[in-house]
Amino acid sequence: MARYIATRAWRDASRILQRLDHDLAHMGHGYLLRGRPVVDPALVVAETDSGEPSPVAFGKPRALTAKHLARILGGDRQPSAHLVDGGWRWYQVSMPDVYGYINASSQRQDAVGHLALVASVVPYSQLTLSEAVGVTLDMMRLDPRPELGHPSKAATDWAEHGLGLIDCWQARQLRYQGRGLGDVETLARRIDALRAMCARWHVHQAEMDLAAAKDKLTAR
Image (cartoon, rainbow, N blue to C red; front, side, top):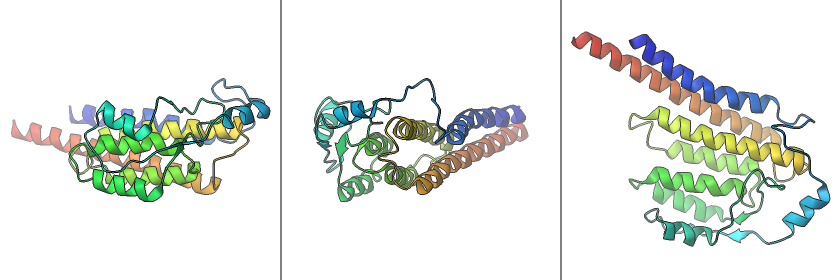
């Protein structure tokens, strides 16, 4: 039973991390990824010049209601890595505001939701992708779940954010001529750090599950 629990946790970790590794291994290659066509640069210019970035002011964290989210995001624009421009410059953020919000949110019971909110905005802001991943790593370090005994849940959620960042990278590299990536070497290191942190959390979960299973067997 103990071996099964550990194996299940490792399998879950492997499924997520293998996809990240696969995407990283193919990053920057000069061919189509996931069936996305390369877009005419003129279309890119036409789309990205169609409007200015929407200013985002996180301010003081509140309960995560629809009203609170509407105040922060200021409209119905839905950025996506699958857009022509890879979602770059949809939002305009202030770094002092971002880190002030993160710091205040980390003290709340609903901290995870606020960290996820910031993670959903910064990759689509005026920040380069390498800068956005740096912010994401800082948020990961503030996630309370690993310390509260739920590292696997945290790892799974942040790995999903990681996959979204990979999508942004692919779109900007292959469809947007590399604009908005920032320092690519730094970007690669930070994506790898995200992957490694998720892996450590999954390993920690497996160790916890194994220890719990052993304790249960001993108690019988």
